[in-house]
Length: 312
Image 1 (cartoon, helix red, strand yellow):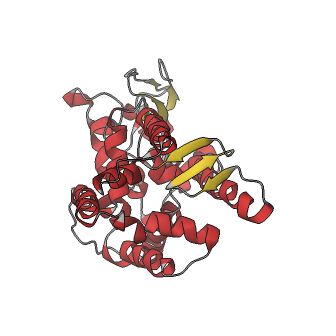
Image 2: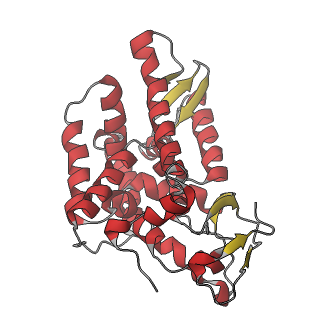
């Protein structure tokens, strides 16, 4: 096993694929995140509303409702059963979308807090911070239950008052108040207390969207897992690294070359940073594996010519 030092993280991918291909999904996520924010801002600034409202509740082109399903559940838990039909339709549309593409796609491709937490992880690596508080990943599910219990007990959607996702998104559009302190707290927590602490261990929205996307069609696949040279770079950049072993190293246990865990955010960083192109997006039902053609049987993994058979 030749583990890549942190100061050389990503250099092999850049050398073999070029800088853009080694960052393509990261760039795509930032474009999507900033574009969604821009669509919300066009209304208050230019008077033309493409997306009106915020991530909790909005209208697309003034007609199509979109409602955060977790907010909808909080409303029901709080006892407000006379919900407008538009809110029901909006929650159903969002629910079905993430049911198909993967619930935690919201976390890596839509949520603005992702930019904050990704920056925190980048800073951790730059500062060489190794300390990491042991927080059970199941804590986020307890947080989710607590959110709904609080809504039931108080008769309000109380969590939305301190929800970092809602506060950051509203703040970027309408201006910040106390929201800065909450977002800064999340950033500092991820830098100094726990790696991927908020999104991976505490965020109730992450827990909820993970449950939604448990049977999603779109998955990260590992059709060339036999070419893996154990550099461990994908483990370093993955926000939910526990999802990798089964798909990457589970062939001898009969595990398919597909990341099936609901915790996977489909961020694509593993595909970006892998110089062997082990990873690719595909469908959960395609279990075909590629074949590695080696012109020199004695050549190390890094010198192989790889061909893919049957991959998407």
